[in-house]
Amino acid sequence: MNRKIIIIGIDGVPWKLLYKLIGNNTMPYLAQLINSKSNIKATLRSILPPYTPPAWTSIATGVNPGKHGVFDFHIVRKTRTGFVSRLATSLDVMYPRLHDMLEFHRLKSIVYNLPLTYPPWIAGGKYSIVINDWMAPEIRIHPKSLENKYLDYFNKGLKALDLKGTSEESFEIMAERLDYSTNGLLELIDNIDWNLVFTIFSETDWCLHANTNIIRGKLTEGANKVFRKIDWFIGKAMEYTENIMIVSDHGFTLCPYILNVPYILKKYGLSSDETFSEMLTINLLGIKKIRVPPFFVRIARKHKRIKYFMRKILFKVGGREGRERRREVPYSLTKILTPDAGIIYVAPGYKDQVENILSKELDIKAIYEPHELYWGPYIDRAPDLILEPVHDYCLGISTKTYKSPENTAHHRDGVFILKTEKEIDVGDLKRLSLWDIAPIALYLLNLPIPHDTDCELSICRRMTSKMNYLSRYKLAKKLRQI
Image 1 (tube, rainbow, N blue to C red):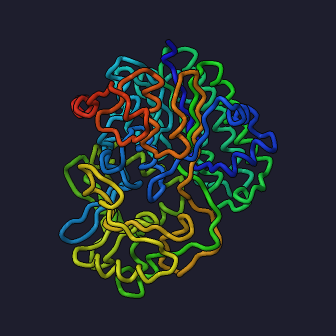
Image 2: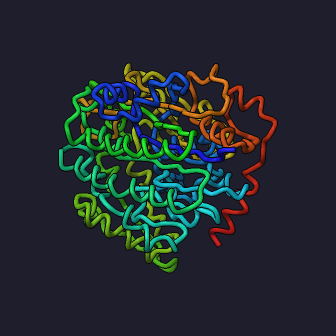
Image 3: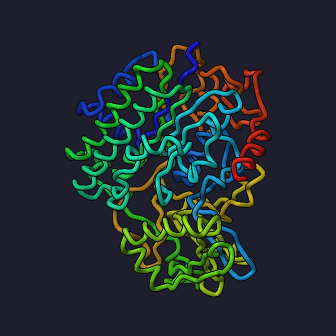
């Protein structure tokens, strides 16, 4: 029995771009997978809004955000006087992910760059190797005993994130980063026993942000080099197992313009230009609350190295409170908070007014309350309002202009490719939801699927082997935190 599977995430890649890449022979190994009639290809429908942390967490858990608790990059709560926002971490994931589920069967995983895996010693267990994602202030490995040998492979080229695919220099940095990370992964795969390899390449997403030429199919040599590095790894992965899954959490599209919702609400006195003048506080060592001077925050935001250094300092000396460095925005400054486009947290008593104003905008197709999209015990963490625009996800957060110029944006159709020798019903795999992926992977590994999975595929309905992973995960997570 082949109890091995490799899941390769190509963040943000749409089918249209993949066909362009295989058409110009940039990704020959991926072309083999796509062109083989025995393999399964489908569109993977993302969540609304199609953002990286909730999307990959849904993929890895098999449940919707209402059950795993992640709706955005941020965790926002409302106090009596204002909004309090912080970046989400591994502590905020409230449902077991694939490698957690394998833990309970004493099966081993190698996980790289899965969002919300920092701190990795919370995200990983006894049988998991976890190299955390780029959103953290530093790259670390769980267990720490592997850092001396492997950390250098994964600690290179993070400045590519700041460049966001806007120059050939950025592509060179991304390609160099991929050189290190793919070789590091192969070293681990060769030298350490495993049943699951789950790796996500964020470089694909970085290539597509603000890069209208790539969306149009005009790939430079530098961009092609990035995709060739990933294709090389796909080719290597095919040598280790027959179970290969290629997944993207969302796609990308070209927007004729970006509609800025905060600008619209500013006209009604519900938002202001000062909304993003962060008032940052930390509880230093849990003893004293310190307000970071606004001028220093502004300098740090403009200078990436200072920002990166300060994040590391806060994580090192601030304990948990330092990791949860907070951005506080009082209601007197703004009645709405939009930490990312299309999601709105609203001060008490103003939701109906905001909804009424935005319902008149022709570029907004629908306005949802969270219970209309999600279900589960953590629905109270969700934004008050979630917007669905007419044009894919062409929304912005600027307060300076009504519509920003042409740009790229996420859209909801991602990619799913599966190579396996195990018999699987392809009838209902033409269009998948994010929470179908983890149960498919467990099925290929001959393991029980979660008892409360949101997967509605026929293989999930027919499977009698189910397990309550959640109750065990809650206990294991508490022990890890201790």
